[in-house]
Length: 215
Image (cartoon, rainbow, N blue to C red; front, top):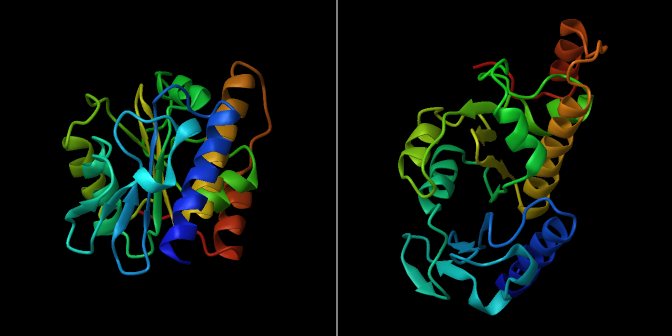
């Protein structure tokens, strides 16, 4: 994909997320690998609903900013995924409501944040790691992702929002939407007796679709 087409795709998909309430105001950030190994990144303080393709922060393959506006303050978080996951072609971070709400629940499993309610959360995300709360922009968020050694494609920042890496922008956006939708189902059914997927059903999914699952 050409850089100009990638710029347009980033802005189109970001606006779709914004228009459907998956992030709000000037929250969230998105990045993608360019064909020459550089990065296009949403600028700091911008809204997903109003990104300008021409003003995206543009980094070369050495990590130097070569044009565009200053990038999101969450660059250490994005860079941690690219540096530890060779398959990462894009990273999306949202402040989506239901996933943030679920991260506040005291009884969630930090090593497997999403309950196994449907096959799709497992297929698109594998295990999601719940990370502790960090101040926005804290480089320690990137350090926490690096500490996972590339074993997770998605993390949930407690009281903050999900971060998902995918092979390209479309895959990353689809996956982060699945994360939010699964969290919404979890919050909707909380306190009810439900039939989640069994351990055997999860194991079959993992084997059938070759899903990253073990630590």
